[in-house]
Length: 153
Image (cartoon, rainbow, N blue to C red; front, side):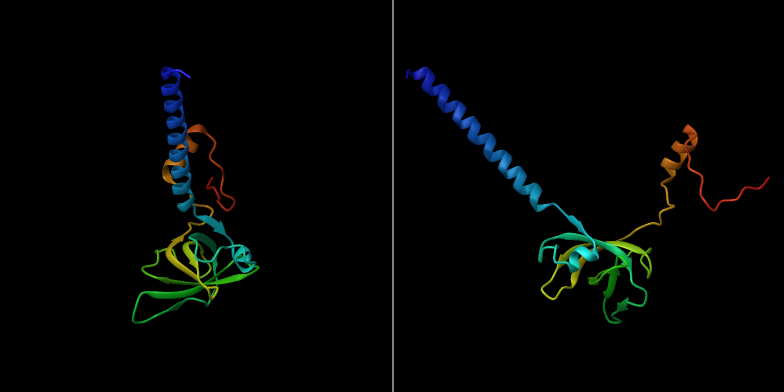
C-alpha cells in the first residue's frame, strides 16, 4: 500500500470513528432526557421503572389531598378510575390544581411505591382552546360548535 492510500485510509477510519462517537454521545444524551408517560394502572402493574424520571397523570382523587400546615408538602392520590397511585410533592401547586381535576406530574417512583413529584402540571378542561387557535378556526370557518351552547334569535 502506498503512502497516499494509507493517509486516505487513516482519514476515513478517523472520520468513521468520530461520527460513531458523536452519534453515540447524542443518543446517550437524548436517552437521559426522555420522560415517558405512565398511567396509574401501568404504575401499579410495575411497568414504571423505580428511580427513573417519568411523567404520571390522572385525576386527583376526591378527599385525598393532605397539605402539611408547616411546609409546602402535599400528598394526594391520582387515579385513572381503575387504579390509584399516591403522590408526594413539595412546592407550590398550580392554580388549577384541585380534587377531581386532571394533572400530570413529573418525578420518579420511590422504593415504597410512592410517586415523588418534582413538578405538577394541572390540565385545562377539554373545552379549552388557545385564543390564537380559536381565531384561526373562526377565520377559516371550521370552528367546532360547543355541545351546550345556545343561541339567541
